[in-house]
Image (cartoon, rainbow, N blue to C red):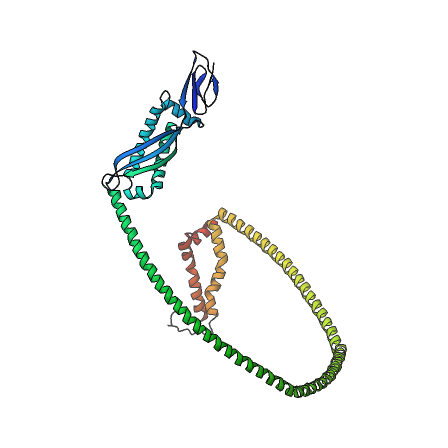
Amino acid sequence: MFYTCGPNEAMVVSGFCRSPPLMISGGRVFVFPCVQQIQRISLNTLTLNVKSDKVYTRHGVPISVTGIAQMKIQGQNKQMLAAACQMFMGKSEAEIAQIALETLEGHQRAIIAHLTVEEIYKDRKKFSEQVFKVASSDLVNMGISVVSYTLKDVHDDQDYLHSLGKARTAQVQKDARIGEAQNKRDAVIREAHAMQEKVSAQYKNEIDMAKAQRDYELKKAAYDVEVNTKKAESEMAYQLQVAKTKQRIEEERMQVQVVERSQQITLQEQEITRREKELEAKVKKPAEAERYRLEKLAEAHRLKLIMEAEAEAESIKIKGEAEAFAVEAKGRAEAEQMAKKAEAFQQYKDGAMVDMLLEKLPLMAEEISKPLSGANKITMVSSGNGEVGAAKLSGEVLNIMTRLPDMVEKLTGVSISQATSQTG
């Protein structure tokens, strides 16, 4: 079955295949009987007379405020329509209006309590905007939009507003008296200004006359100066022309001298060039040839020294290698000799050592007698006992030699006499 509704009404279809319910504002819909249900909600504009009696303001003054609000359920906004259907479905327009009125009146009272009487009375637009803003933010959650809100009336039972009117009337009267006094003052000031302008105009006229007289005298003096200047110029013109003629003659003479001087300079430059070429031919060329010869000799000497140094270096290198080879061969021979001696010492032990000591005895005797051979003069004194002279001196040397076996035995532990007896 088809159902229709006007633009001021919305239909809500619920039931079979309608989850969530279908909401239509101003149109038609097909409804299955028995399994679907259709409900209607009004979208008409509601006019509310919002009265708040004897509400205390911020300063504790009780006043009564009446406002007119226009509001309606918003059918074009699906979310707001859904919220309105959830809250007001099945309720009449009067019931919806009462709920909205109570909500709006509560916000109106709250705003009155935060303002003074003067703020509400003097700035009604600001008060209306505050109520509209606060109420709209709350009612929109119910799906209701506030179309407009206007403050209709403000009155009180304590004659507070009447007293404010008296104060304002007194203020207006005071302003009127002040304005009248200011007008009188302005009239006197304008009259004084007029008199001042009159005197100023008179003085200005006299000043203009004086200026005209001054301009006449200045122009006359200027004309006199110009006439005298012309006379002086005519008198000086001849002298100036004579001076210019003399100056041109002097300039021509100086030009002749400059030309002569230029020719002299040209001749001198040619003479200088000739002498430079002569000097180059007689002195510079031979000097360059000699310098070239000396450079070549120096280069040959340098190469000779380099070659000699290289030859000497090569000779020193070869000599050094030969000496190194000789030292190496000598070292190897001495090493072999020492090795053989070590083998002999190992084999003969004490006998070899005694043999070595016996070989060295002549050298030791030479070293002992060397101080005596180096003496220039020896004086010997005899006590009358024993040998005298060279025999005595030789005996001293032999006496030292006889003490050597004991010294060797103490140093090495080898007895020369026993070693010789064993070998014998």
